[in-house]
Amino acid sequence: MKNLFHGHFKPSESQFKGLWSESIFAFDANIILNLYRYSESTRNELLKVIGLLSGRVWLPFQAAEEYFRNRITTIGGQAKEYDKIADVLTELVTNLGNKKRHPFLSDSIYSELESLSIRIKAEFSESKRVLGDKIYTDEIQDKVSTLFEDKVGDRYEQKVLDAIYKEGQVRYEAEVAPGFRDGVKDKSGNLYRKFGDLIIWNELIDKAKKESKSIIFITDDKKDDWWLEYSGKTIGPLPSLIQEFKEKSSQDFYMYTADRFMQSATQYLSEQVEEEVIDELKQFRQEEENIRDSWAKVLDDLMRTSQKSSFKIVNEDGIFDGSHRLNSYKVASEEEVLKYLIDYTKMRMSEEGGFVGLKHFVTSYLAKKGIEINHAYATINNLKEQNLISLYDHSVGDYSVKAIRILHE
Image (tube, rainbow, N blue to C red):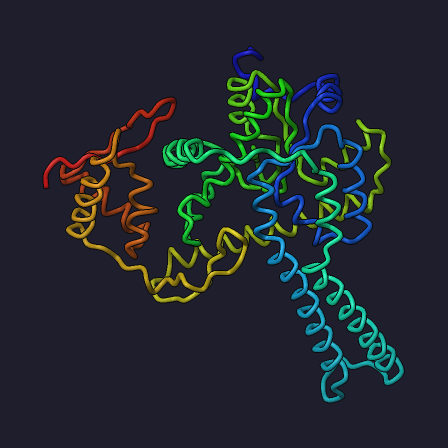
Protein backbone atom coordinates (compact mmCIF):
# COMPACT_ATOMS: atom_id res chain seq x y z
CA MET A 1 0.00 0.00 0.00
CA LYS A 2 2.84 2.43 0.79
CA ASN A 3 4.18 2.07 -2.74
CA LEU A 4 0.81 3.04 -4.21
CA PHE A 5 -0.01 5.83 -1.72
CA HIS A 6 3.48 7.00 -0.83
CA GLY A 7 2.39 10.58 -0.12
CA HIS A 8 -0.07 9.61 2.62
CA PHE A 9 2.55 8.06 4.92
CA LYS A 10 4.66 10.25 7.18
CA PRO A 11 8.35 9.25 7.16
CA SER A 12 9.48 7.12 10.08
CA GLU A 13 12.12 8.37 12.49
CA SER A 14 14.83 6.43 10.65
CA GLN A 15 13.62 7.86 7.33
CA PHE A 16 13.75 11.39 8.73
CA LYS A 17 17.33 10.78 9.85
CA GLY A 18 18.15 9.59 6.34
CA LEU A 19 16.51 12.65 4.80
CA TRP A 20 18.46 15.01 7.03
CA SER A 21 21.76 13.27 6.38
CA GLU A 22 21.44 12.93 2.60
CA SER A 23 18.91 15.43 1.22
CA ILE A 24 19.46 18.68 -0.61
CA PHE A 25 17.91 21.55 1.36
CA ALA A 26 16.17 23.98 -1.00
CA PHE A 27 14.90 27.38 0.18
CA ASP A 28 12.00 29.49 -0.99
CA ALA A 29 12.33 33.24 -1.59
CA ASN A 30 10.12 34.06 1.41
CA ILE A 31 12.61 32.39 3.79
CA ILE A 32 15.43 34.63 2.53
CA LEU A 33 13.27 37.77 2.50
CA ASN A 34 12.09 37.12 6.04
CA LEU A 35 15.69 37.52 7.22
CA TYR A 36 15.02 41.27 7.00
CA ARG A 37 12.01 40.91 9.31
CA TYR A 38 13.52 38.84 12.12
CA SER A 39 15.44 40.08 15.14
CA GLU A 40 19.21 40.03 14.73
CA SER A 41 19.66 37.02 17.03
CA THR A 42 17.04 34.94 15.20
CA ARG A 43 18.41 35.94 11.81
CA ASN A 44 21.96 34.98 12.81
CA GLU A 45 20.83 31.62 14.20
CA LEU A 46 18.93 30.77 11.02
CA LEU A 47 21.92 31.73 8.87
CA LYS A 48 24.14 29.64 11.12
CA VAL A 49 22.00 26.52 10.66
CA ILE A 50 21.89 27.05 6.90
CA GLY A 51 25.67 27.31 7.02
CA LEU A 52 25.90 23.93 8.77
CA LEU A 53 24.29 22.46 5.66
CA SER A 54 26.51 24.43 3.29
CA GLY A 55 27.44 21.42 1.21
CA ARG A 56 23.77 20.58 0.59
CA VAL A 57 21.91 23.88 0.39
CA TRP A 58 20.42 25.07 -2.87
CA LEU A 59 18.34 27.99 -4.14
CA PRO A 60 16.05 27.52 -7.16
CA PHE A 61 16.70 30.18 -9.79
CA GLN A 62 13.08 31.36 -9.57
CA ALA A 63 13.41 31.79 -5.78
CA ALA A 64 16.65 33.76 -6.18
CA GLU A 65 15.02 35.99 -8.80
CA GLU A 66 12.02 36.63 -6.53
CA TYR A 67 14.37 37.50 -3.66
CA PHE A 68 16.19 40.17 -5.65
CA ARG A 69 12.96 41.50 -7.14
CA ASN A 70 11.36 41.97 -3.70
CA ARG A 71 14.39 42.82 -1.52
CA ILE A 72 14.06 46.61 -1.59
CA THR A 73 10.28 46.47 -1.19
CA THR A 74 10.70 44.24 1.86
CA ILE A 75 13.24 46.60 3.43
CA GLY A 76 10.97 49.58 2.78
CA GLY A 77 7.99 47.77 4.28
CA GLN A 78 9.88 47.00 7.46
CA ALA A 79 11.03 50.61 7.78
CA LYS A 80 7.39 51.75 7.66
CA GLU A 81 6.56 49.42 10.56
CA TYR A 82 8.77 51.56 12.83
CA ASP A 83 6.75 54.65 11.85
CA LYS A 84 3.45 52.88 12.52
CA ILE A 85 4.46 51.78 16.02
CA ALA A 86 5.92 55.21 16.80
CA ASP A 87 2.59 56.81 15.84
CA VAL A 88 0.70 54.40 18.11
CA LEU A 89 3.09 55.22 20.96
CA THR A 90 2.64 58.97 20.42
CA GLU A 91 -1.14 58.61 20.49
CA LEU A 92 -0.97 56.56 23.69
CA VAL A 93 1.19 59.12 25.48
CA THR A 94 -1.03 61.98 24.28
CA ASN A 95 -4.23 60.29 25.44
CA LEU A 96 -2.84 59.37 28.84
CA GLY A 97 -1.63 62.95 29.32
CA ASN A 98 -5.15 64.34 28.87
CA LYS A 99 -6.32 65.19 32.39
CA LYS A 100 -9.89 65.57 31.23
CA ARG A 101 -10.11 61.86 30.44
CA HIS A 102 -10.28 58.86 32.70
CA PRO A 103 -8.34 56.87 33.52
CA PHE A 104 -5.26 59.09 33.73
CA LEU A 105 -1.77 58.67 35.18
CA SER A 106 -0.13 60.51 38.04
CA ASP A 107 2.36 63.20 37.01
CA SER A 108 5.36 61.16 38.13
CA ILE A 109 4.37 57.99 36.23
CA TYR A 110 3.36 60.00 33.18
CA SER A 111 6.75 61.74 33.19
CA GLU A 112 8.47 58.34 33.22
CA LEU A 113 6.26 57.14 30.36
CA GLU A 114 6.94 60.27 28.32
CA SER A 115 10.69 59.88 28.87
CA LEU A 116 10.56 56.20 27.92
CA SER A 117 8.52 57.03 24.82
CA ILE A 118 11.20 59.48 23.69
CA ARG A 119 13.92 56.84 24.17
CA ILE A 120 11.91 54.18 22.33
CA LYS A 121 11.23 56.46 19.35
CA ALA A 122 14.91 57.44 19.23
CA GLU A 123 15.85 53.74 19.07
CA PHE A 124 13.19 53.17 16.40
CA SER A 125 14.64 56.05 14.40
CA GLU A 126 18.13 54.55 14.57
CA SER A 127 16.84 51.07 13.67
CA LYS A 128 14.96 52.54 10.72
CA ARG A 129 18.12 54.33 9.56
CA VAL A 130 20.16 51.11 9.78
CA LEU A 131 17.47 49.23 7.90
CA GLY A 132 17.34 51.90 5.20
CA ASP A 133 21.11 51.70 4.77
CA LYS A 134 20.70 48.06 3.74
CA ILE A 135 19.33 49.23 0.42
CA TYR A 136 22.87 50.36 -0.39
CA THR A 137 25.09 48.32 1.96
CA ASP A 138 23.36 45.06 2.74
CA GLU A 139 25.28 42.60 4.94
CA ILE A 140 22.29 40.22 4.83
CA GLN A 141 22.53 40.05 1.05
CA ASP A 142 26.28 39.52 1.37
CA LYS A 143 25.77 36.58 3.78
CA VAL A 144 23.08 35.05 1.56
CA SER A 145 25.36 35.42 -1.46
CA THR A 146 28.20 33.64 0.38
CA LEU A 147 25.98 30.79 1.61
CA PHE A 148 24.54 30.15 -1.84
CA GLU A 149 27.64 30.83 -3.94
CA ASP A 150 27.55 28.30 -6.82
CA LYS A 151 24.39 26.82 -5.26
CA VAL A 152 21.70 28.50 -7.37
CA GLY A 153 19.74 26.73 -10.10
CA ASP A 154 20.18 27.57 -13.76
CA ARG A 155 17.67 29.76 -15.58
CA TYR A 156 15.27 27.68 -17.66
CA GLU A 157 15.40 28.22 -21.41
CA GLN A 158 12.36 29.99 -22.83
CA LYS A 159 11.04 26.83 -24.49
CA VAL A 160 11.05 25.09 -21.11
CA LEU A 161 9.24 28.03 -19.51
CA ASP A 162 6.68 28.03 -22.33
CA ALA A 163 5.97 24.37 -21.66
CA ILE A 164 5.55 25.06 -17.93
CA TYR A 165 3.20 27.97 -18.68
CA LYS A 166 1.11 25.79 -20.98
CA GLU A 167 0.94 23.01 -18.39
CA GLY A 168 0.23 25.58 -15.69
CA GLN A 169 -2.92 26.82 -17.42
CA VAL A 170 -4.32 23.29 -17.27
CA ARG A 171 -3.07 22.52 -13.76
CA TYR A 172 -4.48 25.73 -12.32
CA GLU A 173 -7.79 25.18 -14.10
CA ALA A 174 -7.96 21.73 -12.49
CA GLU A 175 -6.61 23.09 -9.16
CA VAL A 176 -3.59 20.80 -9.25
CA ALA A 177 -0.94 21.80 -6.69
CA PRO A 178 1.32 23.65 -6.32
CA GLY A 179 0.55 27.25 -7.16
CA PHE A 180 -3.06 27.21 -8.28
CA ARG A 181 -3.93 29.62 -5.45
CA ASP A 182 -1.71 32.11 -7.26
CA GLY A 183 -3.95 32.01 -10.31
CA VAL A 184 -4.81 35.71 -9.97
CA LYS A 185 -1.16 36.78 -10.08
CA ASP A 186 -1.29 38.56 -13.40
CA LYS A 187 -1.89 42.14 -12.21
CA SER A 188 1.73 43.23 -12.69
CA GLY A 189 1.70 43.15 -16.47
CA ASN A 190 3.68 39.91 -16.40
CA LEU A 191 1.18 37.29 -17.56
CA TYR A 192 3.31 34.45 -16.23
CA ARG A 193 4.24 35.74 -12.77
CA LYS A 194 1.48 33.55 -11.34
CA PHE A 195 3.41 30.43 -12.36
CA GLY A 196 6.33 31.16 -10.01
CA ASP A 197 5.51 28.29 -7.62
CA LEU A 198 5.11 25.85 -10.51
CA ILE A 199 8.49 26.90 -11.93
CA ILE A 200 10.10 26.27 -8.52
CA TRP A 201 8.32 22.91 -8.32
CA ASN A 202 9.78 21.87 -11.67
CA GLU A 203 13.22 23.08 -10.61
CA LEU A 204 13.03 20.96 -7.44
CA ILE A 205 12.06 17.85 -9.41
CA ASP A 206 14.78 18.41 -12.01
CA LYS A 207 17.40 18.97 -9.27
CA ALA A 208 16.41 15.72 -7.55
CA LYS A 209 16.65 13.80 -10.83
CA LYS A 210 20.00 15.34 -11.76
CA GLU A 211 21.62 14.73 -8.37
CA SER A 212 19.72 11.51 -7.52
CA LYS A 213 18.98 13.05 -4.13
CA SER A 214 15.85 13.69 -2.09
CA ILE A 215 14.78 17.27 -1.49
CA ILE A 216 13.72 19.06 1.69
CA PHE A 217 12.04 22.36 0.79
CA ILE A 218 11.93 25.18 3.36
CA THR A 219 9.09 27.64 2.77
CA ASP A 220 6.80 29.89 4.77
CA ASP A 221 4.18 29.80 2.03
CA LYS A 222 1.21 28.43 3.96
CA LYS A 223 -1.43 28.23 1.24
CA ASP A 224 -3.33 24.97 0.87
CA ASP A 225 -1.81 24.35 -2.55
CA TRP A 226 1.35 23.27 -0.69
CA TRP A 227 0.11 21.94 2.65
CA LEU A 228 -2.47 19.44 3.89
CA GLU A 229 -4.58 21.12 6.56
CA TYR A 230 -7.36 19.94 8.83
CA SER A 231 -9.33 21.98 11.39
CA GLY A 232 -6.83 24.82 11.13
CA LYS A 233 -3.82 22.58 11.74
CA THR A 234 -1.11 21.78 9.24
CA ILE A 235 -0.67 18.03 8.88
CA GLY A 236 2.25 18.10 6.44
CA PRO A 237 3.04 18.52 2.73
CA LEU A 238 0.18 17.69 0.37
CA PRO A 239 0.27 13.94 -0.33
CA SER A 240 -0.23 14.67 -4.04
CA LEU A 241 3.03 16.66 -4.10
CA ILE A 242 5.00 13.88 -2.40
CA GLN A 243 3.46 11.38 -4.81
CA GLU A 244 4.16 13.44 -7.95
CA PHE A 245 7.72 14.15 -6.83
CA LYS A 246 8.38 10.44 -6.32
CA GLU A 247 6.86 9.46 -9.66
CA LYS A 248 8.81 12.07 -11.63
CA SER A 249 12.18 11.94 -9.87
CA SER A 250 12.24 8.57 -8.03
CA GLN A 251 13.28 10.60 -4.98
CA ASP A 252 11.62 11.59 -1.70
CA PHE A 253 10.28 15.05 -0.91
CA TYR A 254 9.46 16.79 2.34
CA MET A 255 8.79 20.37 3.49
CA TYR A 256 9.27 22.49 6.59
CA THR A 257 8.30 25.99 7.62
CA ALA A 258 11.17 28.04 9.07
CA ASP A 259 10.26 27.35 12.71
CA ARG A 260 9.81 23.60 12.20
CA PHE A 261 13.03 23.49 10.21
CA MET A 262 14.93 25.05 13.11
CA GLN A 263 13.16 22.83 15.61
CA SER A 264 14.18 19.74 13.66
CA ALA A 265 17.74 21.03 13.33
CA THR A 266 18.15 20.63 17.09
CA GLN A 267 17.31 16.96 16.67
CA TYR A 268 19.07 16.00 13.47
CA LEU A 269 22.03 18.41 13.37
CA SER A 270 22.74 18.41 17.10
CA GLU A 271 22.55 22.21 16.94
CA GLN A 272 21.25 23.85 20.09
CA VAL A 273 18.68 26.38 18.91
CA GLU A 274 17.30 28.66 21.61
CA GLU A 275 13.59 28.26 22.26
CA GLU A 276 13.18 32.04 21.88
CA VAL A 277 14.37 31.77 18.28
CA ILE A 278 11.86 29.05 17.42
CA ASP A 279 9.11 30.98 19.19
CA GLU A 280 9.88 34.13 17.20
CA LEU A 281 9.83 32.23 13.90
CA LYS A 282 6.57 30.54 14.82
CA GLN A 283 4.93 33.73 16.04
CA PHE A 284 5.97 35.61 12.91
CA ARG A 285 4.56 32.87 10.66
CA GLN A 286 1.28 32.75 12.57
CA GLU A 287 0.90 36.53 12.44
CA GLU A 288 1.47 36.48 8.69
CA GLU A 289 -1.11 33.70 8.31
CA ASN A 290 -3.65 35.62 10.40
CA ILE A 291 -3.15 38.75 8.31
CA ARG A 292 -3.57 36.81 5.05
CA ASP A 293 -6.63 34.95 6.36
CA SER A 294 -8.23 38.17 7.62
CA TRP A 295 -7.72 40.00 4.33
CA ALA A 296 -8.91 37.00 2.34
CA LYS A 297 -12.14 36.96 4.35
CA VAL A 298 -12.61 40.73 4.03
CA LEU A 299 -12.08 40.65 0.27
CA ASP A 300 -14.34 37.63 -0.15
CA ASP A 301 -17.12 39.27 1.88
CA LEU A 302 -16.81 42.48 -0.10
CA MET A 303 -16.88 40.65 -3.42
CA ARG A 304 -20.03 38.81 -2.37
CA THR A 305 -21.96 41.71 -0.87
CA SER A 306 -20.95 44.89 -2.63
CA GLN A 307 -20.75 46.21 -6.14
CA LYS A 308 -19.85 49.79 -5.21
CA SER A 309 -17.16 49.57 -2.55
CA SER A 310 -13.64 50.69 -3.32
CA PHE A 311 -10.78 48.84 -1.73
CA LYS A 312 -7.20 47.71 -2.26
CA ILE A 313 -6.17 44.23 -3.29
CA VAL A 314 -2.84 42.63 -2.40
CA ASN A 315 -0.84 41.89 -5.52
CA GLU A 316 1.67 39.10 -6.12
CA ASP A 317 4.43 40.88 -4.23
CA GLY A 318 2.34 41.46 -1.14
CA ILE A 319 1.76 45.13 -2.01
CA PHE A 320 -1.67 46.70 -1.78
CA ASP A 321 -2.80 47.48 -5.31
CA GLY A 322 -5.37 50.26 -5.44
CA SER A 323 -6.05 49.89 -9.15
CA HIS A 324 -8.67 47.15 -8.72
CA ARG A 325 -11.99 48.40 -7.42
CA LEU A 326 -15.27 46.66 -6.86
CA ASN A 327 -17.18 49.36 -8.65
CA SER A 328 -15.41 48.23 -11.85
CA TYR A 329 -17.24 44.89 -11.66
CA LYS A 330 -20.67 44.62 -13.24
CA VAL A 331 -23.38 42.00 -13.46
CA ALA A 332 -23.54 40.71 -17.03
CA SER A 333 -26.72 39.52 -18.71
CA GLU A 334 -27.05 36.04 -20.21
CA GLU A 335 -26.73 37.57 -23.69
CA GLU A 336 -23.47 39.31 -22.74
CA VAL A 337 -21.95 36.19 -21.17
CA LEU A 338 -22.91 34.10 -24.19
CA LYS A 339 -21.39 36.68 -26.56
CA TYR A 340 -18.14 36.69 -24.53
CA LEU A 341 -18.18 32.89 -24.57
CA ILE A 342 -18.52 32.82 -28.36
CA ASP A 343 -15.60 35.24 -28.76
CA TYR A 344 -13.46 33.31 -26.28
CA THR A 345 -14.31 29.98 -27.94
CA LYS A 346 -13.19 31.27 -31.34
CA MET A 347 -9.93 32.46 -29.82
CA ARG A 348 -9.26 29.21 -27.96
CA MET A 349 -10.19 26.96 -30.88
CA SER A 350 -7.67 28.74 -33.07
CA GLU A 351 -4.96 27.37 -30.78
CA GLU A 352 -3.53 23.87 -31.02
CA GLY A 353 -5.47 21.58 -28.69
CA GLY A 354 -7.66 24.50 -27.68
CA PHE A 355 -10.64 24.13 -25.39
CA VAL A 356 -12.67 26.43 -23.16
CA GLY A 357 -11.94 25.81 -19.51
CA LEU A 358 -14.79 26.92 -17.24
CA LYS A 359 -12.66 28.36 -14.43
CA HIS A 360 -10.24 30.19 -16.70
CA PHE A 361 -13.06 31.66 -18.78
CA VAL A 362 -14.77 33.09 -15.69
CA THR A 363 -11.90 34.06 -13.37
CA SER A 364 -9.52 35.29 -16.04
CA TYR A 365 -11.32 36.25 -19.27
CA LEU A 366 -14.61 37.56 -17.83
CA ALA A 367 -12.94 39.11 -14.77
CA LYS A 368 -10.64 41.13 -17.02
CA LYS A 369 -13.74 42.33 -18.86
CA GLY A 370 -15.06 43.66 -15.56
CA ILE A 371 -17.67 40.95 -15.05
CA GLU A 372 -18.60 39.93 -11.49
CA ILE A 373 -17.41 36.36 -10.99
CA ASN A 374 -20.03 34.79 -8.73
CA HIS A 375 -22.92 36.04 -10.86
CA ALA A 376 -21.13 34.85 -13.99
CA TYR A 377 -21.05 31.28 -12.65
CA ALA A 378 -24.79 31.49 -11.93
CA THR A 379 -25.43 32.84 -15.44
CA ILE A 380 -23.46 29.99 -17.00
CA ASN A 381 -25.55 27.54 -15.04
CA ASN A 382 -28.71 29.22 -16.41
CA LEU A 383 -27.36 28.90 -19.96
CA LYS A 384 -26.76 25.23 -19.30
CA GLU A 385 -30.33 24.77 -18.04
CA GLN A 386 -31.56 26.39 -21.26
CA ASN A 387 -29.52 23.85 -23.24
CA LEU A 388 -27.50 26.62 -24.89
CA ILE A 389 -24.22 25.27 -23.57
CA SER A 390 -22.95 22.05 -22.01
CA LEU A 391 -20.37 21.44 -19.30
CA TYR A 392 -18.10 18.42 -19.56
CA ASP A 393 -14.86 16.97 -18.23
CA HIS A 394 -12.05 17.64 -20.68
CA SER A 395 -8.95 15.42 -20.35
CA VAL A 396 -5.56 17.04 -20.92
CA GLY A 397 -2.69 14.68 -20.22
CA ASP A 398 -3.06 13.43 -16.66
CA TYR A 399 -5.61 16.08 -15.70
CA SER A 400 -9.35 16.50 -16.01
CA VAL A 401 -10.70 20.03 -16.44
CA LYS A 402 -14.29 21.26 -16.36
CA ALA A 403 -14.90 22.77 -19.79
CA ILE A 404 -17.69 24.54 -21.71
CA ARG A 405 -19.08 23.71 -25.15
CA ILE A 406 -21.54 25.96 -27.02
CA LEU A 407 -24.57 24.02 -28.28
CA HIS A 408 -26.60 26.82 -29.89
CA GLU A 409 -25.40 30.28 -30.83
